[in-house]
Length: 340
Image 1 (tube, rainbow, N blue to C red):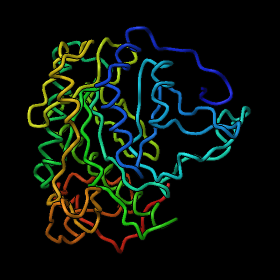
Image 2 (image 1 turned 180 degrees about the horizontal axis):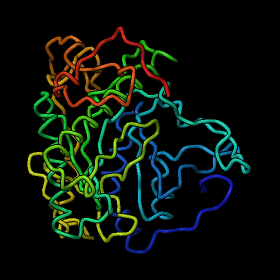
Image 3 (image 1 turned 135 degrees about the vertical axis):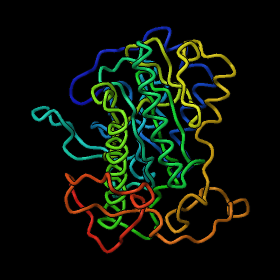
Image 4 (image 1 turned 90 degrees about the horizontal axis):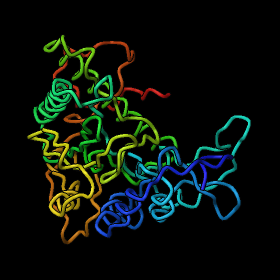
């Protein structure tokens, strides 16, 4: 019921409550957050990370808290982290002096997979002007092209976030082997999150070299942090009269009218099918454990790690403009992971 020790004001309005209580919307959001019986994303409302636990402390909001969250908050967020089931029952107390939880609930050591992503955003956080909207679309399209050049296309999923465009990679691209635990699991994720962050920095730098006039107009927000939240599919924007809806990665054109409430049936159908696919051939089989039963599990040819993941460079300040996208997506398992 609260962010921490203090009760937060309700931001939901009748329009958003009615939207979130549509059966189709509820199913889309909860299915996206509860990916499998043993895999889930935390569900957040506005700044409402936590809710009261049965122990009297606080815990992370879960897909099971959908009604309590959407009846209170206007905007619904989800985490890029996908947690083990045990994180659902973790709880702690709130430190009212430091205004934070006493213990971190949900860490990379308890992740099973991670949805790597980028938020293509205007620096003014406003796409109302046609030239700014075109710049956001151009940078998002440029990123998709670089991913495609690196052999990653069918595993890319995009959303119109209201003020920008999310470009996300299916979480099977970053799934931790089950045998890695503790610090080894954390290193696995930090290595890949740091690597993807550098890849995005490289793409952004190359884009600015080609479009110097857009340096102060558009940017890439790297979605690579532990417990990084983003506006969930079908969420209502915190300020704009728009919902978060899918975009075609191969045709990244924002249609504001399409995102108006109430969402039309064909838009809901697109939302329901969004993020449902990935291409095993686009990433190493040794990094992935499909959740589908083995009888229906798609076959995948073996692919060495060296074709995909990098380890962090010793210096994060070093520009990577001389690297191609495929070089950026190569892994040197001998290099130690940077910790932060």
